[in-house]
Image (tube, rainbow, N blue to C red; front, side, top):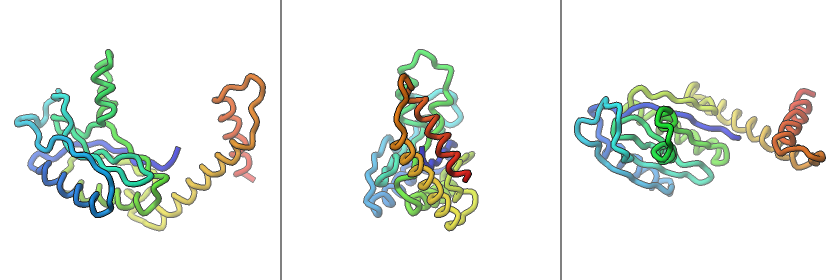
Length: 196
């Protein structure tokens, strides 16, 4: 639970992956964020292929209190999720490829300033390096470019999460009640409080 950025897309044909990696690395170093660099150059003649070579290309960085932001690609130049790629390669069900092409980053606990920096970075990278970028920003900043709306959305989500945690901590489990049942009952109680 918490504000998340969801995204997928492709790396542009004539753009330089190593140049993008250097730019993102510089930003990570400015903010003192941890990062990891994977392969820096795509294999030749990989654009448009439906298959990929199993390697990861790009960079991932981690602001404090934020899930890693993966700017990683597969050899076919599509944004790929490194964690899902490993699971998919081990899986017996190879048909469900959509799992490897989606990324997400939860920014709720990093705060609105970090969220804004990440979205601004996506705006820049989209103009220079990406194509067919599809991004859903639960903070509404990508869509609106409105910092006040972003702050308000963070405040609302924070209040909701805090209220749910408080409600959950005060409710005692009924005999034989499952964890799922407890959470559903807590959510209903919180919802009825918010309606008043």
